[in-house]
Length: 257
Length: 257
DNA sequence: TTACTCCTACAACCTAAGTTATCGCTTATC
DNA sequence: GATAAGCGATAACTTAGGTTGTAGGAGTAA
Image (cartoon, rainbow over all chains, first blue to last red; front, side, top):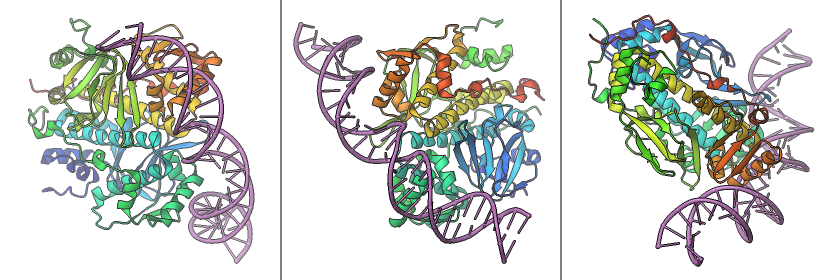
């Protein structure tokens, strides 16, 4: 943080994975575009759109989803400030899922055309991008397990607890209760349940004192209790660590002079 | 294919994504280890094992799964010859899922310690690895949709059809029926169903003339019919194409002389 | 061969979750 | 300020899929 780029969202995100050289930091900063804003419920991109790059979330919540033939929708993931979205499609020419803002949101674009420069000039940055996608995949795997083999109570509790953990990574919140801008409809589509059944399950959790609900929000009152219900084991959320960065056989940059 | 490395599984796989320079080809070949074999039902690695690298499947079928606290199991994906497995964990020190052989199998290891060399010496190879993981993610997303929002009939048909498409990519099979080494138990764990219900659903498909079953095998008789049942749209399986490779602003290699 | 295990089929029964509908309560829209 | 649209709670009813149990066949080891 010796340079004046501490406020860049992408630099901050990358530095949570690896120590960056001054050069890497400046490269990232120079390639990132200024922030853009979306209002609540705005579509950030749609499935099939040209895939123009990835975005770092500076403020607000967004979620990725797929619309199905029969009119239903599957929410693939929910993203919070600090997360990177859209890296999934970087190797595709079009978006493979849609992205919507769950609240007013502010994202910093990183154009795809700049990625080749990153790959060519820094092994550290290249590895870091890999680690970010690896973490994303780990979360997707856990989502698969959630959808395939858990009851409604477990699904809901697990999802909420996971998000709260992901929030704490960047927010460093001390309190054991926090508020999430998630409607029951979004949760239903994320968990493969009906909205009615999500409401029923919330009713149970409420009478058990685990959480409060209302107004497109969920307030987690007893996160440990929810973890018990979910059988939550958060090790899949741990920071990936690559030996590539611990014992790099090359200098941190392999670019030409 | 001008050099004598046509028989390398990893080179062949990478070349299905991008044209490789002679140098890239030789680099890959020099870093790949010789094939290792596993018998049917052998554990290739377990969740928590040290993550030593990735493998290209030369022969046989394998599947990735997670064991849950309550004794159930979620199959995450099934892999066929030509597929690359284990790239998911390359940024983790330990495996985040287990891998088992569904039939006698032969895989070629690519040690993780060699990846840094690849990243440092070739933008083409680095991008290709990215495209491989991107395709893998696209398949996972489709699996999410399958688990979250489809009926048992749709789930089963979709899964079988997807695998048959993935097989055809490497096998170039002309026939419209093919045999898969999948037991009903494995399918149940992949689809989030009970084995009994998989059996019931197979009974329906059998009377409709869509497939035959028996002896830990499934024979797809009418793939188009199954695609109709599944509402299958295979575009997520299409080869990812990166503009990085179409319009590379750098020479194909950025390594030092 | 026996004995064992694994896979599959199928029947009977059960329950978790879906569906539909009604009624408030907010939050937008004009 | 009125109307509309969306969200949440709850009740009544339905159903897809889970569970348990039995039985036969195929592969495997002694």
